[in-house]
Image (tube, rainbow, N blue to C red; front, side, top):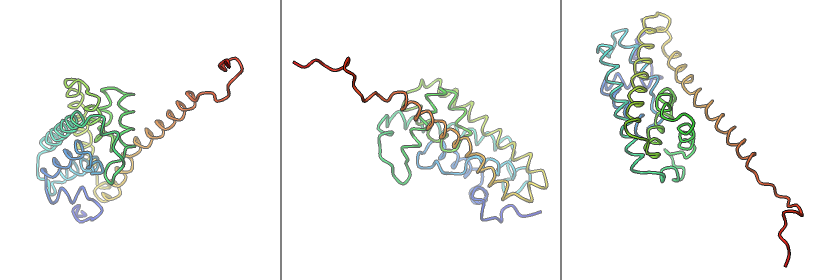
Length: 228
């Protein structure tokens, strides 16, 4: 069987190989709560962790412990993001673009939160970039903490259990083990589809709103003010 640790293409695999379970937790926490870490490999990291447990390679940890550790790190990361959003406030959305911060990402997350409400915390868990910005947006909007905590825990548990189990069970299939590079790259690409779709929808709604609110520029005699 191919050595799963040998491929330089798999940053998630290399991270686990180097730092183990603590590295997984640190990465999940950072991607969940630190605005500059939205690019970290979340979905592929969980899938790879489940695969390694299934094959008893490198990550010699019980599956239940891996899922529990990931869920805990995700909850704590979102807590940090929420607190950061409350502390920074609307100023976060007014800052100019920089190397690590794109105002467009914040605006998309804000629109996503407005549209879906608290359940956006659950949905965003499965969408790269959004899962970093949504907790911060909840803090900026001062969502009730009890509501935030409930949906935060639900989203973190569903995300950690679902993706880790997918990796665990697929990792027992010979085809997946022999083509791990392509499988993980495919997961990265597929996980970005919801983000692309939501971006297209938001731009379409923005264009429609702009069209419907454009004021008429031609004045009629009835609307002109009388001359003195």
